[in-house]
Length: 396
Ligand SMILES: Nc1nc2c(ncn2[C@@H]2O[C@H](COP(=O)(O)OP(=O)(O)OP(=O)(O)O)[C@@H](O)[C@H]2O)c(=O)[nH]1
Ligand SMILES: [Mg+2]
Ligand SMILES: [Zn+2]
Image (tube, rainbow, N blue to C red):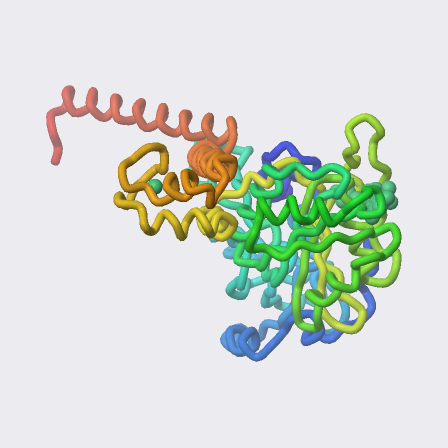
């Protein structure tokens, strides 16, 4: 059983897939320092080193098999039994971008990953164990990418949806990575400056860059974030040009790119797995498959980051738990009356908050069903116990 096949559930194409697609060549030896290994990580790794483990970074995950970049090229490895068991309760499975400690096994096809180093950031989405609803504890989060410094949230300039922009920015910000908005395909629009201004209204505190993967215009600005020892990732819907930009940053055609459908301007999920690729000259880059919805949880901080202005105003509301919908002494409503903030913005804040609440409690029908089944089982067990007690009296 492939772990990722059983644990993913969302509707996007990469769910559970991580199927062998276009396999980038990451075999060229790189120094780990070039892709983010530093003193802090070495310090965190010290106990593992003492235990005889070697350090590596996860380039991609294919079910149980993990491709690692190591000091001496790439190697295939699998999580140790303990690691896999622990991952049932924590989010312990290795993800693209993870730093791990592995034990080389020269006589086997694969090495063994025994430790995952603390993550400086992690992009997560809900995870559910499809193989069994009985083990409802297995419902948790799945880390889809780790240790990102900057996450580029990519949209096609000719197809920007402000609500989606806000939502994705908030969700990705909650990973702990710095969010940068990228409006790609600038070559397809008349006036990209207007679009950037519009986007700034939606996400005022986040850097926005307009670029063209086709012509290369603006890509230099993105390269600034991909400095040596830093990790960047492209995230966004299928067909927005993540792999095209990846190739631009790498300076070579590493990732396969795909056509966009005429009817709905969407891509076809050309990329099917997350790939971490060393950038020539230093730094690492993760290309990801297109997402329909990240389905991320724990994005509260993300919302706060995107709606900084509202959060700040809310600090002056009379009531701590003000919902900004008519309470007396509401600083947010006051700002709207004064024309300092648009009602639309409060609207999208509310909508996003609602959506996040929804995601957090009932991420998916599957999760709901898993919860329901778990409750049912509990009630049933409870009833059985009651009956048993009645029959045999209390045993303490
Ligand atoms: N005109 C124009 N086309 C672009 C640009 N960037 C990418 N494209 C085209 O958009 C299509 C999709 O690009 P990809 O890079 O495969 O998109 P993706 O985001 O990686 O898609 P998935 O892998 O499916 O998630 C391709 O035909 C690209 O050539 C751009 O800046 N301008
Ligand atoms: Mg792609
Ligand atoms: Zn208020």
